[in-house]
Image (tube, rainbow, N blue to C red; front, top):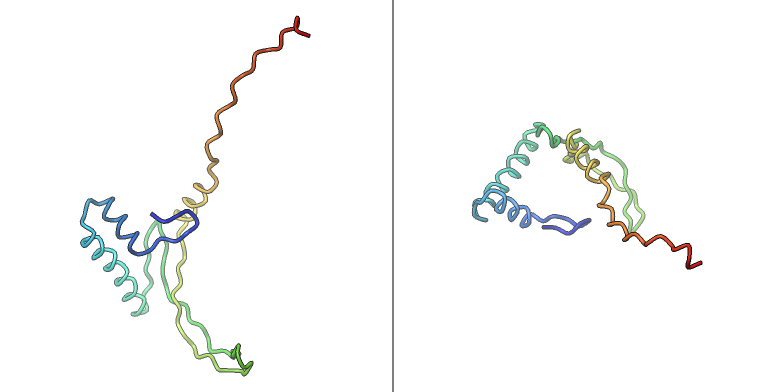
Length: 121
């Protein structure tokens, strides 16, 4: 599994699917590849993909604009393009925020010290 704060690779995702589903890594890889390919194909056709409880994928259109070449400083025309966009669903946002807001387990309390003896004073 990926490290906290790190990133999960496709190979790690395949490993997780294999572990959870008791499928071989090869079968799990086919499943992961098929899901990714289906999302890409739908976006290529201009469709929106909605995964209830997770989020939605769609394309956003970027208008043409004037850019700048960072090396030379010359102005360049940037053509219009489409970029994929993911919008997380409410359930996913709630799940992530709930887990992040959960306090870590409190340390066990220190052993109680005996009350001071009044005669020892």
